[in-house]
Structure formats: structure tokens, C-alpha cells
Length: 205
Image 1 (tube, rainbow, N blue to C red):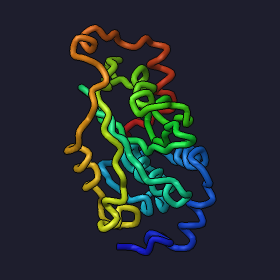
Image 2: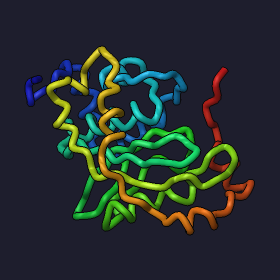
Image 3: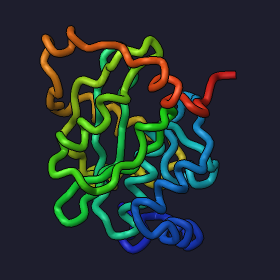
Image 4: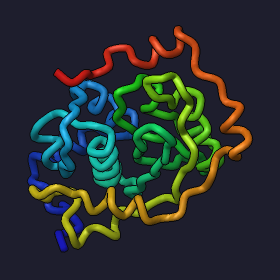
């Protein structure tokens, strides 16, 4: 277990994280980082050092940065059909939910804290959550995950891969967003939305 005053971060790392100040500052740093496509599970410390992340690593980093800046470290997981899942860090201001996230799609990132429920927040991602065939694929959202449960594994500062959080997300209850009948009636996104969402999309070399 790490010291609660620093959570295992060095003074320099803490200064960097605290300089972000709030969820929007954290999002701006994540947006400035290149998106990478490697099969890694870096801790927030490693993300800070490498200055790059993918969705899962970005969510972990955001949760840690939120914690350092006075917010509870919370994750939310989205499950998709014929697509990859998406993980976001969530926060609350005046009883309303917002999100910080890293994504290879333009619309699956930041959310202002204006959503009354987690379902409302999750649904804000539905229309722009699609696969490369243009199919809207989002189906469920998890309950919030309090990241303190992983403190004994040093999830914020470990030099080892932190796949254990992703593995845990696979085991927890998820709420359905739409019915099977609704899913069968979904239309593919049009070309303009598709092009807008993949703007500056990172591709494998």
C-alpha cells in the first residue's frame, strides 16, 4: 500500500498531475498525447513518462489525475457488439456526471458534467459509437468502479502491466442500454458522421 499523500508518485509526477487542476485540464493533456495502438496496459506513471496512451490507459491515467486533484477515482466501462469496449473515467460536479477519456474517435472523449444519471452519460456516447462498418455497436454500461480497490496492486505507479483492472471490468454487472429488438432496427451511420468521427484517427503502420 502506498502513502496516501503521494500514492507512490514522485514529487515531480505529482506537480505535473496537479498542474492539470480539473477534468478539462486532464482531458487537454490526454488529447495532446498521440494515440497508440500497441497491446499494452501501462499504469498512469508509465503513460505520463511515455506521453502516449490508448483508451484503457487513458482512462486509468484520467482516474489517477482526478484523484490527485481531489475527485474520487472512478471508471465506467462500455461493452460493444462486433466492436471493442471503451473505458472512461467519470467525475461528478453538483450532482451531475461528466467524463474524461482517450479515444481514437473524436466524439468518444470528454463530457461536461451535465448528465443527471450514468445512463444519461452513457447514452451521450451511443450515436457516435460505431465500428468500421458504420454499425452502432454500444450495448451496455457498467456500474462505477472505485479504483481504491486496486491500491494494494499499485495500479497508478506499477511498472508492470495493469491488466487486472481490465480483467475485473469483464466480471462486473453491466446495464443494457437498448433492447434486442431496438438493436435489430439500428441503421448504419452516414458518411459525414463516419468521416467526422475518424478525423486524425491513428492507424497501424
